[in-house]
Image (cartoon, rainbow, N blue to C red):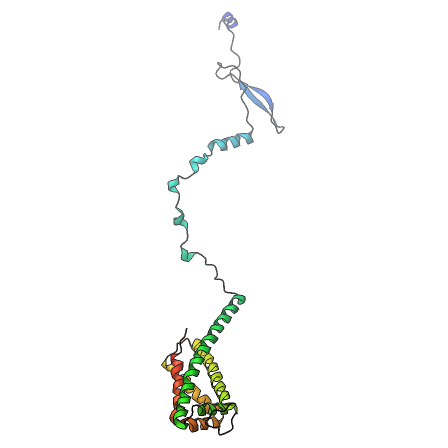
Length: 253
């Protein structure tokens, strides 16, 4: 090689990167390689990215943007596709009426039963009293004879009572008959409520037969003797028939 040519021609500087000392933020030391790239560019320092920062930048660069990962609206399932059917939904327990609310209802129902019973008893009293007075009129010629006989049920009037009106015995007999049938009407209505029935021929017949058993088995024997004496056998039977008819025809409301 010609020395002159070699001397006149400036040999280009080192073409490779030039190591430069560099200290990281965490205290580590290393060399930063800077220099020409192919001998055409000026020396430009290359930014040395710490490994930790380089990894996060790389993750951010490769992560998908939110709009790319979101599903399109038409791909989303409608609410009814994921909702459970009504029968599969858990049902809340039905609240029960507290005792404080049940007591007024029971009191109201009891008052209604008593009211119906008094009305039914009044019908029974009217039907039975008219039948008994008619029967004693036919048998003894006086409508008060049967009422006087009824007084013997509470021990008033003696064993044999008069046929005529008595200011003490007769009112007692009327009161005994009316009071007993009013109580009988209330019991009759309560029995219908307990059985869930309405007044009909069967319930009327049961009421008449129960009245006969009460007079025959519970009340004094002199009562039935005075009934037959003052009203006759047919008149006594008609008394219980009237009771059964009034019971069957008693209105429920």
